[in-house]
Image 1 (cartoon, rainbow, N blue to C red):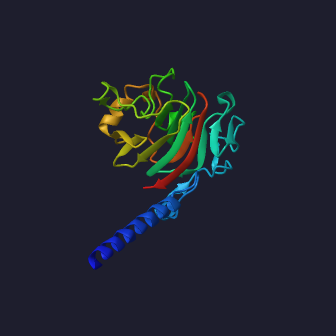
Image 2 (cartoon, rainbow, N blue to C red; image 1 turned 90 degrees about the vertical axis):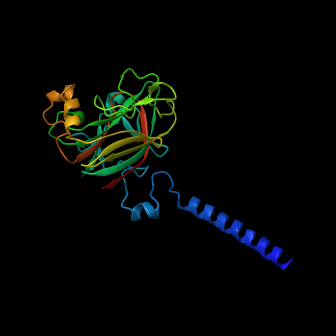
Image 3 (spheres, rainbow, N blue to C red; image 1 turned 45 degrees about the vertical axis):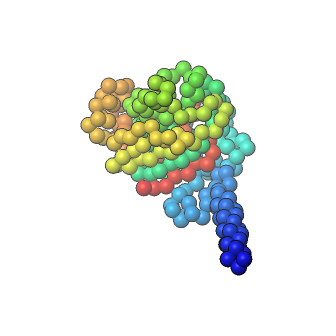
Length: 244
């Protein structure tokens, strides 16, 4: 009987420890547009606090146009005719970026990196992580692709190009890692492809696109991060970056 009581006590203690562990994990989970203590310790930086536009401005401007607004803790392009592309105040070289996006039906946007002021547009210097509603957007460059350069392989389950996006109107999670050794794109935890900027393969692909006529395209090893705001309504939240 004593052994049985000890076993029962052990099971009770284990259950309590598991409950505490779950509660601790829940407490450590960051609120929207915030960082946990562990993320801060790991070097993450929040780029959007959910209430202000601090740290952002329109490309080559010092202000933000009225087409960008903050709604319900999200950075929203409400009017693509009066929004333009937003860029960060800070520049980044090697980095890891994570964010959530929610795009409108037929919407089209993008995340452009290593943007410099030397180009006439953000995409004249920076490669673009495409964002769009894959179901109804007119552009054939699909969500998560490196615009005109790299796309995911065929999904053996469907026989179609891999697509991990959720439908328009739902939140999706993006992870973009850019380093001199390797870059990769992920959507909703699914890795699409890897590439190396400036490699023979990368340069050969550039030579076959419109970017071949842009001498500064993908030439800078650092620059601003940009959010595209001229092709439809899109919302962003939980935007955070970590230098690599």
